[in-house]
Image (cartoon, helix red, strand yellow):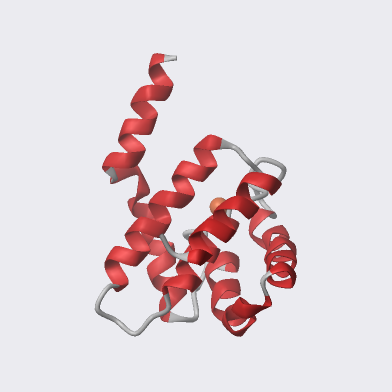
Length: 133
Ligand SMILES: [Fe+2]
């Protein structure tokens, strides 16, 4: 597992910790990494954006994409090694909702990945388990 995955995943657990959002985020990341394999795109961008884009989803549904940028800055303060990806990660987060206009290839892939989540086996299995409770 990539170091960024562990770091951003732990950051998510500390700042949010909601299982449904974590599973959703993991699905987004899976799809992004699958669609960008064999490209020169950086996996770290998708991984960090994946764990951060909905980190405040519970507190605010209409502003969560903007508020998440504060968490991105906080994460980058802890791990400055990813600062070089700030613009790309920010684009993914700020334009992740379906009516937004992504600027970079990263954010285009990211926005589409979110639309695909409900069709993933992982998400379907999570829903099934949740219904049985
Ligand atoms: Fe969202």
